[in-house]
Length: 469
Image (cartoon, rainbow, N blue to C red):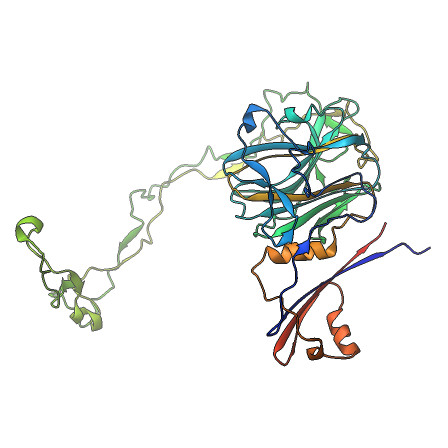
């Protein structure tokens, strides 16, 4: 039986020719493909005023400069959540109308744009569990989450977080499981689509702009591992007082040799060196600039006696050197430095001590970590030193086929967030004819080409995504 395959093509054409008008503004009408539980595009009424998005009233976020604004990308009706201040804490929630189970295949997807880059801070989202989620306006940084996903950058940290909080069914304790080698942040100033796919076979994918960045198994790629070890250190076992774990010691029988001179210098003058022929002993290295004149406004009483600036002595340029000649230094062959006794193997060494291993009382095997608790909302809870971070279209779906925004809308928004290019259309009669043109334009996945014909230039970019269960 053949697996179903969905092919989505995006064709973006940039052409230039004289005398044509620009395309009319795009109308923003985002709709994900496939079945989904939650979708927010921020179009229409203000999401805060309409109650679709709720700001936290926790004092930590008091006065947070966050608003729903029109995105300056030339797409009519495109609105975004804008974090407009820097060095601020932000907290807000997109609550779901009804909670739903996270069991099975599902997708988390959202867009973010760093309009002024990301100096230090986060642009991630947190998925909140139904059982532990308080009222939306009470959410803060201590609110338990199930998944944290998205960009985070500061200092040496530069990663797209994927963190799962997983509960030990025996100890009932929750533990964060971090992706071992996460991808890096797209830190340019363009809009990027971040997608996390988790399947019921315990595999996951991280995609940025639908390009695969990381994939693997939840049972193999998380740290610490989802399932704890069968055995663990005995907490009651302690290292004996007479245990010797120093592998080497200083030789107690060694003594400093009689001829060891600790005061000998590291370097000495080279007695074999001779002064180069032509060395100008009586000439200084620098002399007063003969072309320098005292400025007209120089006042000897206030500024002191005028002294011209120093320049390199012209006579020294071609000579091997000027001034008093000094012998160069060389390494002292008799230098030994401070003496110390050599190290020898410790005859009493017993090896590295480690506690005895016992059966782990909290050992368990979760064969289905992809099964998550019921989820009730998505939170933006971040601190950032950078302003101008915007969040757009957010989607949560329970399907093995990840939802994708309208290809035309995505390509128009992304092109508008880059430097503008001419977007006029060539006359139809100016285009190449025949199948060869289509074969060149509609090329395989992720291929770009430039076609030139007469006075016009055609830039063609094609992208394809093959999605399957």
